[in-house]
Image 1 (cartoon, rainbow, N blue to C red):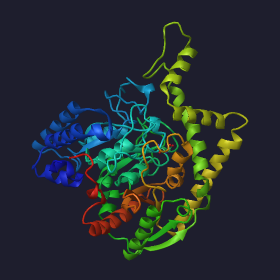
Image 2: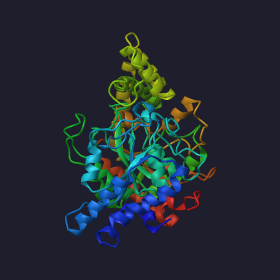
Image 3: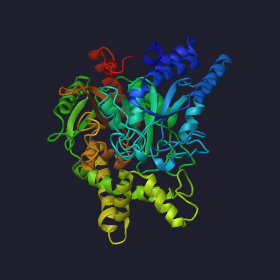
Image 4: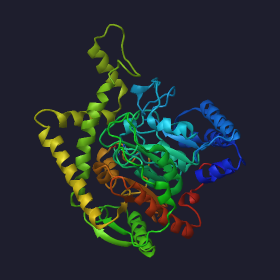
Amino acid sequence: MTELTKLSAVELSEKLQKKEVSAEEVTKSHFERIEKLDSKVKSFLYLDKEGAIAQAKEVDKRRKDNQELSALAGIPLALKDVLTQKGIPTTCGSKILEGWIPPYDSTVVTKLKNAGIIILGKTNMDEFAMGSSTENSAYFATKNPWDLKKIPGGSSGGSSAAVAAYFSPLSIGTDTGGSIRQPASVTGIVGAKPSYGGVSRYGLVAFASSLDQAGPFARSVLDCALLHEVMAGHDPLDSTSINEKVPEVVKAAKTLDIKGMKIGFIKELGGKGWQTGVINRFNESIETLKNLGAQVKEISIPHSIYALATYYLIAPSEASSNLARFDGMRYGLRIDDGSMSAEDVMNKTRAKGFGKEVKRRIMIGTYALSSGYYDAYYAQAQKVRALIAQDLKNAFKEVDVLISPTSPTTAWGLGERVNDPLSMYLADLATLPPSLAGIPAISLPIGLADEDKMPVGLQIIAPFMHDDRMYKVAATLEAKLKEQWSGLLIDSIPDLMGA
Ligand code: GLN
């Protein structure tokens, strides 16, 4: 591995600012590694080498002219293929969007470009972000860089794998029910889902609009916070965007002190059925948090046991409505022999263009929203959603943040759960309650499970628009763990790729 790909965004930024290295060199060194090794990991769907190098040259020019540049100017990033970037194919991991070139930038991409961040390419994902393993991609499965026979999490598995494989120090994912936190957890990196409305959804192809949020992945908490701050902020182009000051997550990630903080571990998230190695690491981190001066106690979120059932009604309902726009008329794929009716074109295009999981969700969602069943399913789920949000709100009267393991298990084997949707859905058990409540949560690596030596993640949940709190706890714990491990957990990744 060249030295440059090994560095964090913060370290690269220092070198760039001191002009010890150019953005062009940084960008090229990452492409070199991708070209050598992504055939094994398969994290990218599309690489924009030419565009990225041109962008890097532009940053170098601006630096040479002593123009003011952001901290992340010249730092490479991998972008989940669900966010539009002008002129670059966007597929959402689906065949139905094959060949579609968006004519505009999503707000997230505009912000990245304004900050001088170099977009290397688009990463693989479960089709329309539906899944927990990236095996639902219509193109190929992505592998976990810790063990190439295992899943990298999902749906943002291309983005998590790209960072864990040192193809990029930063990447962006989206999280509807856990798709940033769970992939971060199983690949041993940091990933954050911001408060709902904290990051603009303009140009984020919708899965379940009331839940979708884009957020950062990185190998360290501070890198993650730096990207979070670039992405976040009010956007008049998104009616659900919050018009408030962005929480000061970078400052929080530098405050390595949690003395006196009150932390609650969620009673319902753990216990029977959860992997022993996951629970062991989780219990150890509770002890570490106590040693760091926090007060830790058990908190019950009684309705969280209904989160899975609630989410798997609400998300498919919204998806069935959102995905109606893919009708063979407007975007990408169109099956049409010239003699077919409009209805036939729609039927054939959707039959061919959507994969099994997407069709399953459209069916469930259409059923739950249909007259006669609406009250029994969708409306009922909305009521339970409100109860879960209320439970969490009540908990924050007693504690500053809540914690749980991010996922019940470590990464499982490729293929193990593809024919059993319910076991795939169970991976989201802990990530769903904050998603339904619209509140922020982060996943931090806390060690390897004893059974399989695969990474375990800790989920830290904060109240709405208090994203800074979870960064403070994550950064403080990370600093302590770094002492124990003499480095980050990801530094101990086995060299499976011969690099
Ligand atoms: N695994 C969940 C699902 O399949 C979450 C996906 C997501 O957050 N995009 O719906």
